[in-house]
Image (cartoon, rainbow, N blue to C red):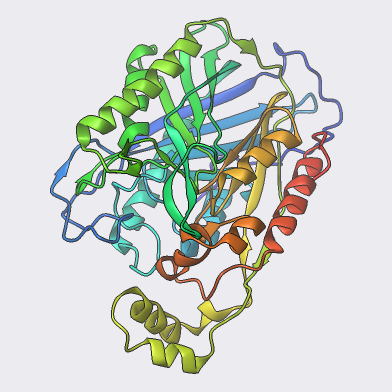
Length: 455
């Protein structure tokens, strides 16, 4: 197939001849929205205790495409792609193929592509964890993504951007010591990221709404109902889109919510709600977003469209030997499944695993940083401190599993130790991963010419 664009060059941090004359070199944006609700009965991902195929479609699933393009004064084109999907995560094993296809067809360098998942637990199996991905659904998802990119190519318009922020209190830290053991329980003293950041794009000539991005950090796990659902982010996106000009889209961008859960608490313990609770949480978030949109917002100055990547390998603290796995393979439950999985796939016994990190600077004051893991909130807060306007996106371009901090690895608990069985990891990470991630993140921001605080 012929490339969608005849020529392509990715942006650089020092594009010679760049002029900040927004009338000469505006940012162009094309959008598309494609439904990805499953077309046949299938199990849903996210909760190990949930069995059987889904019972209903409570809230439809979508993939939403944001295609950015800018031409510099010398006529060189830079472009970037953001795709937000109502899924648990994008398939890690398919990522190199998918990124390569986007580059071949549309001239999009991998560093300029962010495929992000809202991390809803109400969608099909799209990742290979202890439970394999549904291959037919993954192919359908990828086809809808590519169809959306093609549609967005034909809808490019010059835009201006503005942003605003407010706090929201849905999320609470879920790691708490009880009787000397790290448990999953409400911890109002633990760190969270309460900020909701909203970015609105409008057509330059008419001021017509083109799209709204809003970023927040909290697991979409209000309910464990066996129903297809985009969860509270889906409710919020639906309400925001209804308030925009016709044809405009809204996308929820998930932060580093690995240890942040919805604040549904009864007698000091978490509980799962129903679909009505999902709608209530989503409506509350939508109220915050619409409140920001209805107030004066900060104009985002134009800048070159720049991207970069800085992958790093995260080492495991120790690997199980064959004897341990053979002994464990006869055990019931997750330990047995995990042992048999590793015995059957020795490639999982590598000494470390690749953490993908890439950044796309969309404007002066707006940079998206994507990571292919379920990072805990401390990493998101760290990235925000490093440079103004950074939005950390977990679940970006694949999914390797939970990525805890060094302190959390010492403390134990689900994110640090217990989750490895569900993700098919060979062992807990070494505490040195935090230093490696902080260093790689700071290097990445410097690569795209952002000022950086001391990591």
